[in-house]
Image (cartoon, rainbow, N blue to C red):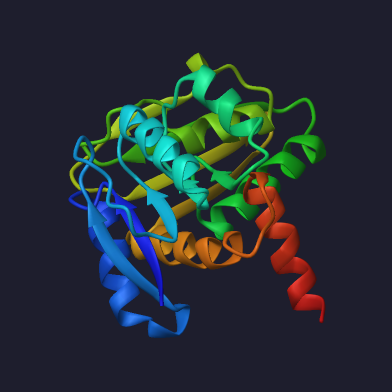
Length: 223
Protein backbone atom coordinates (compact mmCIF):
# COMPACT_ATOMS: atom_id res chain seq x y z
CA UNK A 1 0.00 0.00 0.00
CA UNK A 2 1.25 3.47 -0.88
CA UNK A 3 1.10 5.94 1.98
CA UNK A 4 -0.85 9.04 0.92
CA UNK A 5 -0.20 11.95 3.26
CA UNK A 6 -3.38 14.03 3.47
CA UNK A 7 -2.38 17.61 4.23
CA UNK A 8 -5.39 19.39 5.70
CA UNK A 9 -6.84 16.17 7.11
CA UNK A 10 -9.16 18.05 9.47
CA UNK A 11 -10.93 19.87 6.64
CA UNK A 12 -14.02 18.76 4.73
CA UNK A 13 -12.01 17.50 1.77
CA UNK A 14 -9.41 15.89 4.01
CA UNK A 15 -12.04 13.90 5.87
CA UNK A 16 -13.69 12.85 2.61
CA UNK A 17 -10.34 11.68 1.21
CA UNK A 18 -9.53 9.61 4.29
CA UNK A 19 -12.98 8.00 4.27
CA UNK A 20 -12.82 7.12 0.56
CA UNK A 21 -9.33 5.67 0.88
CA UNK A 22 -10.71 3.27 3.50
CA UNK A 23 -13.71 2.45 1.30
CA UNK A 24 -11.66 1.85 -1.85
CA UNK A 25 -8.78 -0.55 -1.10
CA UNK A 26 -8.39 -1.21 -4.83
CA UNK A 27 -6.66 2.18 -5.10
CA UNK A 28 -3.75 0.76 -3.10
CA UNK A 29 -3.56 3.80 -0.82
CA UNK A 30 -3.19 4.13 2.92
CA UNK A 31 -4.12 7.49 4.44
CA UNK A 32 -1.66 9.36 6.64
CA UNK A 33 -3.45 12.27 8.29
CA UNK A 34 -1.49 15.50 8.65
CA UNK A 35 -2.44 18.93 9.95
CA UNK A 36 -0.89 22.04 8.44
CA UNK A 37 1.69 23.70 10.64
CA UNK A 38 2.89 20.46 12.25
CA UNK A 39 6.08 18.54 11.37
CA UNK A 40 5.81 16.25 8.36
CA UNK A 41 6.42 12.53 8.97
CA UNK A 42 9.37 10.86 7.32
CA UNK A 43 7.44 8.00 5.77
CA UNK A 44 5.02 8.77 2.91
CA UNK A 45 4.79 8.03 -0.82
CA UNK A 46 2.70 10.97 -2.06
CA UNK A 47 1.17 14.17 -0.69
CA UNK A 48 -2.44 15.18 -1.35
CA UNK A 49 -2.99 18.77 -0.26
CA UNK A 50 -6.29 20.51 0.43
CA UNK A 51 -5.30 23.00 3.09
CA UNK A 52 -4.35 26.67 2.74
CA UNK A 53 -1.94 28.62 0.52
CA UNK A 54 0.69 28.48 3.26
CA UNK A 55 -0.03 24.81 3.98
CA UNK A 56 0.28 23.95 0.29
CA UNK A 57 3.70 25.57 0.06
CA UNK A 58 4.91 23.72 3.15
CA UNK A 59 3.59 20.42 1.77
CA UNK A 60 5.28 21.00 -1.59
CA UNK A 61 8.58 21.63 0.17
CA UNK A 62 8.16 18.36 2.10
CA UNK A 63 7.39 16.45 -1.12
CA UNK A 64 10.43 17.97 -2.82
CA UNK A 65 12.63 17.05 0.14
CA UNK A 66 11.53 13.40 -0.06
CA UNK A 67 11.33 13.31 -3.87
CA UNK A 68 7.66 12.27 -3.75
CA UNK A 69 4.69 13.22 -5.98
CA UNK A 70 2.61 16.22 -4.94
CA UNK A 71 -1.04 17.03 -5.71
CA UNK A 72 -2.84 20.15 -4.56
CA UNK A 73 -6.37 21.39 -5.09
CA UNK A 74 -5.92 24.32 -2.72
CA UNK A 75 -7.10 27.56 -4.30
CA UNK A 76 -6.01 31.19 -4.03
CA UNK A 77 -2.35 30.19 -4.28
CA UNK A 78 0.23 33.00 -4.67
CA UNK A 79 1.40 33.60 -8.23
CA UNK A 80 5.00 33.00 -7.17
CA UNK A 81 4.11 29.55 -5.88
CA UNK A 82 2.10 28.70 -8.99
CA UNK A 83 5.11 29.63 -11.08
CA UNK A 84 7.28 27.39 -8.90
CA UNK A 85 4.90 24.47 -9.47
CA UNK A 86 4.82 25.10 -13.21
CA UNK A 87 8.61 25.00 -13.37
CA UNK A 88 8.92 21.73 -11.44
CA UNK A 89 10.94 19.01 -13.18
CA UNK A 90 12.20 16.63 -10.50
CA UNK A 91 8.94 15.37 -8.95
CA UNK A 92 5.46 14.92 -10.45
CA UNK A 93 3.51 18.01 -9.30
CA UNK A 94 -0.19 18.47 -10.00
CA UNK A 95 -2.40 21.52 -9.48
CA UNK A 96 -6.02 22.20 -10.36
CA UNK A 97 -8.42 24.65 -8.68
CA UNK A 98 -11.04 21.96 -9.22
CA UNK A 99 -9.96 18.31 -9.40
CA UNK A 100 -13.26 16.99 -10.78
CA UNK A 101 -13.01 15.59 -14.30
CA UNK A 102 -16.66 16.46 -14.94
CA UNK A 103 -16.00 20.11 -13.99
CA UNK A 104 -13.05 20.12 -16.38
CA UNK A 105 -15.31 18.90 -19.19
CA UNK A 106 -17.95 21.46 -18.15
CA UNK A 107 -15.33 24.20 -18.49
CA UNK A 108 -14.48 22.96 -21.98
CA UNK A 109 -18.20 22.90 -22.83
CA UNK A 110 -18.53 26.53 -21.72
CA UNK A 111 -15.44 27.43 -23.76
CA UNK A 112 -16.97 25.93 -26.90
CA UNK A 113 -20.34 27.55 -26.20
CA UNK A 114 -18.68 30.96 -26.04
CA UNK A 115 -17.33 30.38 -29.55
CA UNK A 116 -20.68 29.11 -30.85
CA UNK A 117 -22.60 32.01 -29.32
CA UNK A 118 -20.15 34.72 -30.31
CA UNK A 119 -21.76 38.13 -29.85
CA UNK A 120 -23.88 37.02 -26.90
CA UNK A 121 -23.41 38.63 -23.48
CA UNK A 122 -21.74 36.17 -21.11
CA UNK A 123 -22.59 35.92 -17.42
CA UNK A 124 -20.92 33.68 -14.85
CA UNK A 125 -22.33 33.00 -11.39
CA UNK A 126 -21.08 30.68 -8.65
CA UNK A 127 -22.52 29.53 -5.32
CA UNK A 128 -20.55 27.96 -2.47
CA UNK A 129 -20.80 27.32 1.25
CA UNK A 130 -20.38 30.13 3.76
CA UNK A 131 -16.98 28.81 4.90
CA UNK A 132 -15.28 29.33 1.54
CA UNK A 133 -12.67 32.05 1.85
CA UNK A 134 -11.91 32.99 -1.76
CA UNK A 135 -14.43 34.69 -4.03
CA UNK A 136 -14.91 34.22 -6.86
CA UNK A 137 -13.89 30.59 -6.61
CA UNK A 138 -10.89 29.12 -8.39
CA UNK A 139 -13.24 27.20 -10.66
CA UNK A 140 -15.16 30.38 -11.51
CA UNK A 141 -11.88 32.07 -12.43
CA UNK A 142 -11.01 29.14 -14.65
CA UNK A 143 -14.39 29.49 -16.36
CA UNK A 144 -13.84 33.24 -16.71
CA UNK A 145 -10.47 32.56 -18.36
CA UNK A 146 -12.17 30.16 -20.76
CA UNK A 147 -14.55 32.87 -22.02
CA UNK A 148 -12.26 35.90 -21.56
CA UNK A 149 -14.45 37.44 -18.87
CA UNK A 150 -12.79 39.70 -16.24
CA UNK A 151 -12.91 38.22 -12.74
CA UNK A 152 -14.74 41.28 -11.40
CA UNK A 153 -17.64 40.46 -13.73
CA UNK A 154 -18.19 37.07 -12.05
CA UNK A 155 -21.00 37.15 -9.50
CA UNK A 156 -21.14 34.87 -6.48
CA UNK A 157 -23.11 33.85 -3.41
CA UNK A 158 -22.24 32.08 -0.16
CA UNK A 159 -25.20 30.01 1.03
CA UNK A 160 -25.30 27.47 3.85
CA UNK A 161 -23.33 24.30 3.08
CA UNK A 162 -23.63 24.47 -0.72
CA UNK A 163 -20.86 22.28 -2.15
CA UNK A 164 -20.47 24.18 -5.42
CA UNK A 165 -22.65 25.40 -8.27
CA UNK A 166 -21.39 27.17 -11.40
CA UNK A 167 -23.68 28.74 -13.98
CA UNK A 168 -22.77 30.17 -17.39
CA UNK A 169 -25.41 32.15 -19.27
CA UNK A 170 -25.27 33.45 -22.84
CA UNK A 171 -27.77 36.25 -23.48
CA UNK A 172 -29.02 37.95 -26.61
CA UNK A 173 -32.07 40.20 -27.20
CA UNK A 174 -33.89 37.10 -28.43
CA UNK A 175 -32.85 34.17 -26.24
CA UNK A 176 -30.79 32.91 -23.32
CA UNK A 177 -28.71 29.74 -23.13
CA UNK A 178 -27.80 28.48 -19.66
CA UNK A 179 -25.24 25.83 -18.75
CA UNK A 180 -24.83 24.72 -15.14
CA UNK A 181 -22.81 22.31 -13.05
CA UNK A 182 -23.89 21.43 -9.52
CA UNK A 183 -21.81 19.31 -7.19
CA UNK A 184 -24.06 17.21 -4.95
CA UNK A 185 -21.36 16.26 -2.43
CA UNK A 186 -17.59 16.45 -1.95
CA UNK A 187 -17.09 12.83 -2.94
CA UNK A 188 -17.13 14.14 -6.53
CA UNK A 189 -13.85 15.93 -5.85
CA UNK A 190 -12.35 13.48 -3.37
CA UNK A 191 -12.83 10.42 -5.60
CA UNK A 192 -11.34 12.24 -8.58
CA UNK A 193 -8.39 13.49 -6.50
CA UNK A 194 -7.58 9.93 -5.45
CA UNK A 195 -7.76 8.61 -9.00
CA UNK A 196 -5.51 11.44 -10.17
CA UNK A 197 -3.10 10.60 -7.35
CA UNK A 198 -2.78 6.99 -8.50
CA UNK A 199 -2.15 8.26 -12.04
CA UNK A 200 0.31 10.93 -10.87
CA UNK A 201 2.44 8.39 -8.98
CA UNK A 202 3.21 6.73 -12.32
CA UNK A 203 4.30 9.94 -14.04
CA UNK A 204 7.80 11.31 -14.54
CA UNK A 205 8.91 14.54 -12.90
CA UNK A 206 7.15 17.64 -14.21
CA UNK A 207 4.07 19.82 -13.83
CA UNK A 208 0.64 18.35 -14.60
CA UNK A 209 -2.88 19.77 -14.85
CA UNK A 210 -6.42 18.53 -15.43
CA UNK A 211 -5.77 18.84 -19.16
CA UNK A 212 -3.06 16.17 -18.93
CA UNK A 213 -5.25 13.86 -16.87
CA UNK A 214 -8.26 14.37 -19.15
CA UNK A 215 -6.18 13.44 -22.21
CA UNK A 216 -5.08 10.27 -20.43
CA UNK A 217 -8.67 9.33 -19.55
CA UNK A 218 -9.93 9.98 -23.08
CA UNK A 219 -7.18 7.80 -24.55
CA UNK A 220 -8.02 5.11 -22.01
CA UNK A 221 -11.67 5.14 -23.13
CA UNK A 222 -10.66 4.66 -26.75
CA UNK A 223 -8.79 1.42 -25.98
